[in-house]
Amino acid sequence: MTLDLPRFYKACNPSKSLTKQQYYIDFAAVRGSKIIRTLKRQIAVISPDEPTCQLFTGHIGCGKSTELLRLKSDLEQEGFHVVYFESSQDLDMADVDVTDILLSIAGQVSESLETINIRLHPGYFANLFTEIADFLQTPIELSAEAELSLGIGKITARTKEAPKLRRRLREYLEPRTSNILQSINEELLGKANTTLKKRGKAGLVVIVDNLDRVDFRPLPSGRSQQEYLFIDRGDQLRKLNCHVVYTIPLGLTFSNDCEILKDRLGGGVPPKVLPMVPVKRRNGEEFSEGMELLRRMIMVRAFPDETPETQLELIPEVFDTPETLNRLCQVSGGHLRNLLGLLLGCVMQEDPPFSRESLEEVIRERRDYLLSSIDDDEWKLLFQVIKEQAVRGETEQMILLRSMFVFEYRDLDGQWFDINPVLAESQKYKSWWKQNN
Image (tube, rainbow, N blue to C red):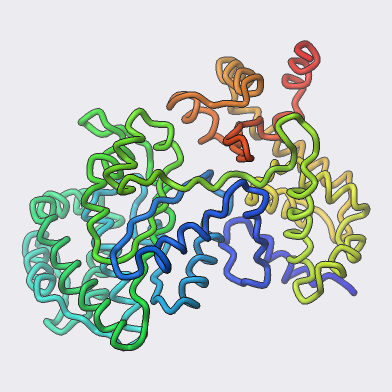
């Protein structure tokens, strides 16, 4: 059996979220907790008829979108109407405010409902669109009967690439935030829930992905944009009249205000953190269960129509030896996007079966790329984390986790941290390790 290279390439593209369930691998058993099951139980079992707001975070690229799409599928099987969207498609992540997020949610919900012939026309928004057009002195042509999603879409498109226009719109909408929220809850979400339940649905769930990509940039107040949105204004984002799951920046879990975040936006429940897939244990021994699932993740993309047993038998069609596949999984550190990125580097160099030499060249390129951005102070922080297997406070989190110099793992004893294995390939690390062990 030969590998379908174009299909394999598409399946391994690290910039695309996994949408085909046939490629899905459940890593819950090795990640230390069954996060998606927990999120689903809160909605479908514990509080199906009362709105919930849950928070989800983790490294960018660790597989959050894949897990959220799985949650969507699971909840749809339970009878819920689920609106999943990537907020970065609507919003400029360098410049976001609460009203931007609320309007984005309203537009996406409205558009999703229109696909199943539920068309709602909140009167408040019809008037608001007219006022906005007058205030901005820019034509936004909308009839009184226009769909809500169309109106919000036109405003979003007009302001997304025009920062000055966006700021003026915000100044106008900010005093009206409470009215906007009330209209969304009563005229959109409330009516949507009622109509959906009349059709036999269990209710409405909104999954807002990619909000973890909101920039950390400081605001004039001295707070970061992330702190302002999710902590200072978290109580407003929590008030939506439906089930909501937000992705939030990982760094907020290390903030001094993490308890305020938990209470205001999480309703007393801390964010669920999606860690890496462990490739080794705390003591340095290989973690065979994690390695096995990563191998399966690669091979199911190569031969999705075959059984897991047959896929493993077909390793020689993809790699020159099983050891090359193991090396790929190990050096990824269990970071799923990194794993696919390294694999894609091999695909771009040669046809399968991929050689160990080709993989080592890709690893060296990735290593040198990362090394070029690390200074001596950051190396000191790195060595401290390696010794303690812990990250302490916002400074270390910002420098080490956001830059992906360090990865987070979970086991029965809790969280622990380790160096990105690609950096462990450097002479700097090897010299330090030799002196300290």
